[in-house]
Image (cartoon, rainbow, N blue to C red; front, side, top):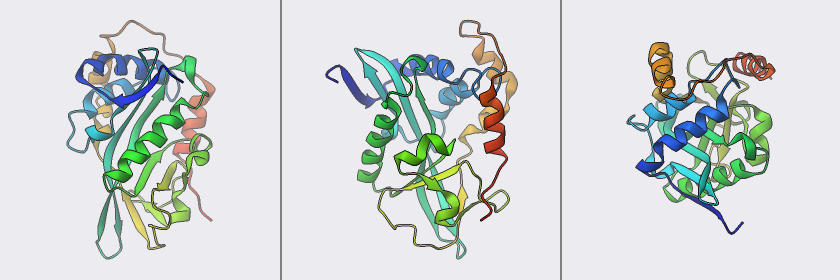
Length: 217
């Protein structure tokens, strides 16, 4: 597409990206949303990677965004490997299911690899990501540090095939998303946007199931 551009986010883009994020996630995982507050706060966090903060423009308008933080894999010997995790990927609801998200992922993969990263992690619906090179954490022997299991929603992609050599790793996530636990701060920030109605959707139950399930075999 001649009028399609993927570029780094600039300071003047911040509010537009927050508005986009709010629209993309409103009522998807819970009634309302906190993701736009996460985006707002993530930029201040020491684990945020500004070199992997991209927006996608179509005809001069931002319709997509992807942001990354640092994360880590630690083996049984204490060796810690720094990887990246995209904690936020969103596309304007009017343009979803048109491969714009895939474009953002692939562009960020290329950049991350040039920066020396060789593994990307994310939490999400496997149906949205397996076609983009992600596999279950169980297949890469990467468990979740909190309780040592293999969450269904924890997915990994090797930017260099075979770099995860079968050793047992624990996934250590950034605490950047902890800001969303402050519900008063989330509500205060959301109040700076036009009012939207909170409602239940079936996707919220789907999210609950993925969030609370694990791969056991």
